[in-house]
Length: 103
Image 1 (cartoon, rainbow, N blue to C red):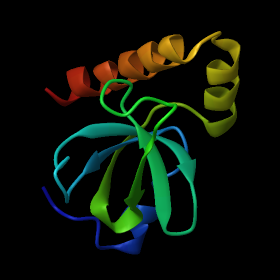
Image 2: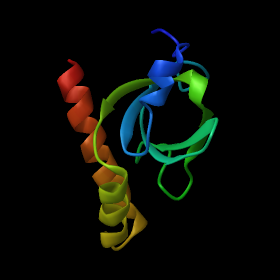
Image 3: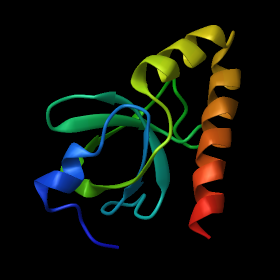
Image 4: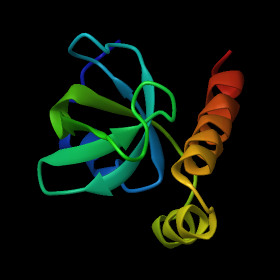
């Protein structure tokens, strides 16, 4: 896997996008971007990293895979779900679609 060195690749990463980690012990793992700051993002995969305890990672250690859902729609969907467990299940379903399309 290539590291996202070009700024154009990093500009694609936004809230609601599916990304893949390129560095660290979680290399190769697929995540959903929950929050986005200037240089860091908070990620969740619904299993090892639930919404309640998101993973913080540097933008340069991620590669954009696809745009799954818009930011406003993601926030609305997560707020509509009653508990954190349902939110994690929702995130796992979204990421499962991406993994299925990559095969």
